[in-house]
Image (tube, rainbow, N blue to C red; front, side, top):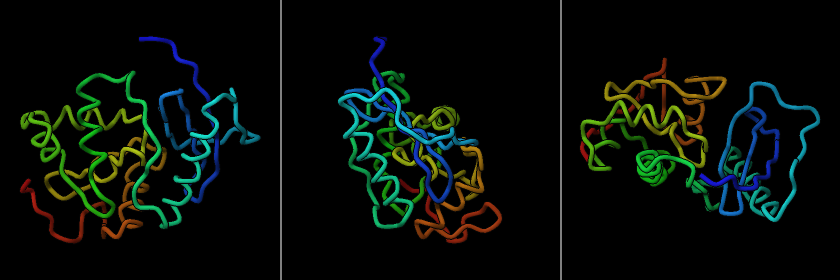
Length: 178
């Protein structure tokens, strides 16, 4: 792995503070922070400034409900090939739709890898841009979310997208067919 120059930007949103990080190839990180640094500011400015500001604008627009699909380029080159495959598949899930871990595993051609899919998603460096909140258990329940607010935030994000959740369960029936 090469050590690529990275730039970052901290932003405040309605759901908390985020750290955005990028390389010259694309966004490498989007993380909800438990505690926002003070002051919120950009560090390591470089030619990725435009990309970071685009990512920040898209993130704000998504949280306001006016953006349903992100267009900012992502740089997944530091991740394993399995993670890249899982994240590419999850990135295709449209706003307001959900899949199960098993469905994602089947779609990447590894139907026995549902737990490995869950492990990969637990280490998703680009939450929201890779919408791992759209993945649920085969039982229709929300299982884990690697953000400070956990499944509470996952439920909020799904509700924000029109997917009804109650007591960490999907309200509407869903199909496990692929």
